[in-house]
Every structure is written in C-alpha cells, then in structure tokens.
Image 1 (cartoon, rainbow, N blue to C red):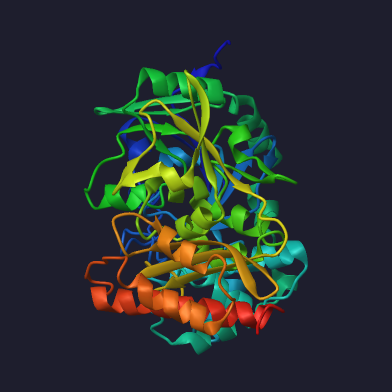
Image 2: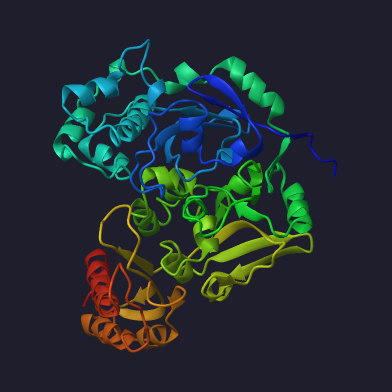
Length: 487
C-alpha cells in the first residue's frame, strides 16, 4: 500500500490566524504554546491537571471533509500535536470588533467576573454553550449552564451571579463561531494537506500521526516503544507531573475508521478514537443507565477530548467506565501486523497496569454485546464531589430478572483492589435467588470479606468497605423503583 506524503508541521488556526508548528514547540501543552508563543496570555494555567478549567479554550476540527462544532477542552494537558487541522478560539478571540461579546457582556452586567484567573475559562465554557444553543435553536437554561460549568471549579463570586449571567444571554445577539472563524479559504488549505501523514521530531522526541490504520500498524511494529495517544486527558496529567514523558508518540485521532460508531442487533461498536461525549450521546437510547453514568464521568472539557478506549486501556482501578463494561461483557478489539483478535474485558486486566496487550498491538475499538430481554443495569460512582472528581468506589450490576427471581447476575467493583474486579462468588449467590431486599443486604455483607481496599487520600479502607456494602442495597432500591419485579 502506498503511503501518504509526509509533512513536518502542525497546521492550525488560533483566533483566525494560521500557525505552523514544528520541532520542540509541537510537544508543548496547548496552553503553554498559547501563552508563550502565540502571545495570548488570557488562557490561564493553574492546576495543570485539567481540573480547574482556567485553561478552557474552544476547538473545531476539520475531519473527513467537514468541520465539527466548537467544543470546550482543557488546553493545559493536551499537547499541541493533537490539534492539527483545528480552529482554536481563546478568550481573546471572543470579542467582536473590539467589543465584548454577549457572554462577556452578561458576565460583566451580572457581576460574574472574578480575580481573572478562572473567569476567562468560564467565559469560554459559556460561549461554547451559547454557540451550541444558537446552532440548535434551544434556550439556555440554568441546568444547561450548570452542566457546562462543571469543569470550571472556582466560584469566588458564588454560583448565583454566574448562573444569572448565563440564563440572561440573548442568543439573538450571538454570532456563531463557525461564521466568524471557519472560513472557506482555510478549509481549502486544510483539505489539501488532510491526507498527509505527520512526522515531527524534536530534541530526542518524535510523533507520528498517520491517516490510515495500516500505516499506524506498520509504525507500531517498527517503533513498539511509541505511546499511543488520542485525547491525553490522563497521560497529559502524568506528563505534566513528571511521572513519564510523552516524547515518542503515535497519534490515532486522524484515522477515520477508528471514529466509527455502530449499533447492530448483536451489540454496539465504539471505535477507539470515539470521544466520551460522542459515546455518552450514542448510548443514551439503547443503554440509558450507561449514558447516565457518563454524565457524571467528568467535565465537558474532559469528555470532549478523552476517549472510551483510553479509559479502558489506561486500566485504572478506579476507571469509571470499566465496572459497567465488565458487567456488559465488553470486548477489547486489538490489531497488529500479525492479525486481529478480541479480548473479553474480564480477562484483559492481569494485575495493576498489566494487560493482555502486546507491544505492537493497537486497540481499534470496544464492542458491547446486546443484553437482551429482562436484563436491568445499575452503575454507581461514589466520590467526594458529584462532578469532576476521582472515584472512591465504583459499582456495576447487570441482572436478568423474571418473576421476582434473579436468573443471571454480573457484578463488578472498582476502587477496592489493584484492578477493577468481577465478583464471581457474589454473582453465584445472586443467581437463582429471589429479587428481594434481604438478598441484596446479605450479599452486601458478604462482599466485605471478599475485597481488600486500601486507605488513601480519597477514602479509608473501612469507608470503602461500608460503601461497597451499601451500594448493593442502593442497587436493589433503585431497581425496585424501576421494575415490576418488586415483591
């Protein structure tokens, strides 16, 4: 197969100005490039972990011959090499003809502004909300404003002035960002170079960004040490903290087939570069409980950039999607020059950060089989904050219930061991039992003897044991409210 031509620069626009980035600059976090190379210091860096939202910017991507809508993301943890063929808008680019835009004006009118560190990020988040509502012809509600601001944590003025600013935005005065920044001339430039594979080199650094899966497979075979990156919402934090460095990288987010989402009678296919936001929306109809879990998974900034496959393959014992996927019997699909294979998620995790994954393999997607009739699911996340927080304990149950009897059970817990675990002894006890409060209370008590959680900054071992027990009772109560199977 003939390879595409190569280029050694990242092409993007920032507030309508084209930039070509190469060498060591291409390995900088986007926020650092904006502040110190593009001379746009309105974007702040506070936590450098994607938590506080001070670094929020808006990004539209040119992909598969069309522009995406503008979405918010955290620029402090995302390397700039992920933004090839993107249009980025910072807080400096929001003003119209040197006048504050509608969001900025309302933040000033209702005293939503603060010390200056977090306000630019909030303005970008609310501008993303205004742009989306304007595009979809829907009103801005307080609930929508709260959801869009979950990734902007500072509240120096309190919630009320910020929410008042949001609900009073006049969308008739809003000029769509696409109209301002997605110009046809730029589109034509991006179209011409969109089929080029990128090969960047810096000081003892390199990054490849191919446009086809065969080329990605070939590169991984040639350079097995390449770290695969798509969103960098987890790896970018570790890089910033010096845990390891993203200096030899294979980027998959320009390979069209890896973004495929498909629903068939057999199940759901989620391509490996599918964002968490797209996944949440995709499963809303067929797996509403899974979609509900994703709503409290993380902030919009993280979900717009991060991927489901990244959450699965990073393999954290508190990875929020993993318990649910385990109980849904999800499979990880892997490919290399030797061929393709699928690995049940139940056998993918061997130990802490140890996986059934070869150095030359690439994940192409996650498959979730259809559950079938009479199955019910419950997925819980317990953390100190409701939104944008690392879990202390995660819980998932999938139960097949008929005539007040549990015919089959799958249960998983996270945060209680070195990996997320299925609980075969609990599943055995539940199978064949009555769907009753006593059944769930009894297995909840038993689970305390089967897990050995640790104490850390998020929770003590006793707290995790108590929470795990209580979540079985909570599972019964909520399923009972939703089901005709209650005695």
